[in-house]
Amino acid sequence: MSSSTTESVSRGSELYRGKAKTVYHCDDSSRLVLHFRNDTSAFDGGKVDQLNRKGEVNNRINAFVMEKLAAAGVPTHFDRLLSAEESLVKRLDMLPVECVVRNIAAGSLCKRLGVEEGLELETPLFEFFLKNDELHDPMINDHHIRLFGWGTQEQIDEMQRQTLAVNDVLKPMFADIGILLVDYKLEFGMYEGKLLLGDEFTPDGCRLWDAETRKKLDKDRFRRDMGGVVEAYEEVARRLGVPLD
Image 1 (spheres, rainbow, N blue to C red):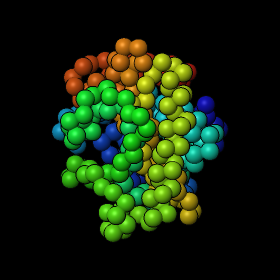
Image 2 (cartoon, one colour):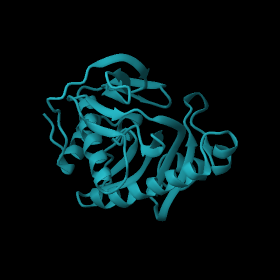
Image 3 (spheres, helix red, strand yellow):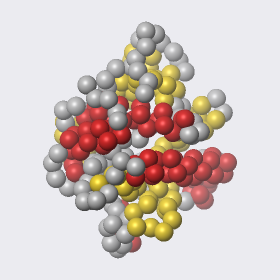
Image 4 (tube, rainbow, N blue to C red):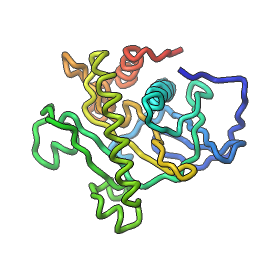
C-alpha cells in the first residue's frame, strides 16, 4: 500500500466538485488532487447525507484497489495517497462514458428487464452508459459513442478490454475474502495518448455482497435506508487488509 511520502504537493484551486469528491489543481500541471469527502448521494443527487469517516475509508479502499490493478497490468491514474482523505492522480482527459460489468443481476438491470435480483449470470455482462446526471445516465452502445464523438472505436475496444480485465483481477480477489463482486462501474480518460482507468473504485460505485449471507456491503445500504453504510465499507476494508486509522 502506498503512503504519503516526504515529497510535498501543494493543493491549488478547485477544478471540479462532484457529489462525493472534489478535484483540485496542484503545483504539477500533469497531476490533480482527489479529495474524498464524507458527502453521500443517490438518485442523481436526489438523496444526500454526510457520513462520518466515509471519505477516508473510500480513499484508502480506492488506493488499495488501484494498486492491485496496476500490479496486474491495468494502467490507472492513481499515483499515491497524500493524506487520509486525499490522493494524487494523473490528470486525464476523461471520456463521458461509464463502463459497467455485471456478474449478478441487481439494480437497474432488474428494473429494465424484470430480471430477479441475485440471478448469477453465466458470463459477465458489459454495458455502456452516458455520464450525464441530468439525463440519468442513459444506456448507450458503440454506435452512439462513435457517432456523437464520445470516443473512437479504438477507445471503445480498449475500455471494454480493460473493464473486463478488472473483473478478472477483482472478482477472485473479493471471492477470497468472502465477498461477491456483483457489479461495478468504471470511467476512463486519456493521458499522454494512452487510455487509463480514472475516477475511483469504492463501494460507492460497485455492489459487494457477503458471499454467505448476501448482506449488502455497498451504497445500496444508503439507497435503501438500511443504515450501517460506513460500517459496511469498513468491513470491506478490513477484509481486504486495508489499514484504517
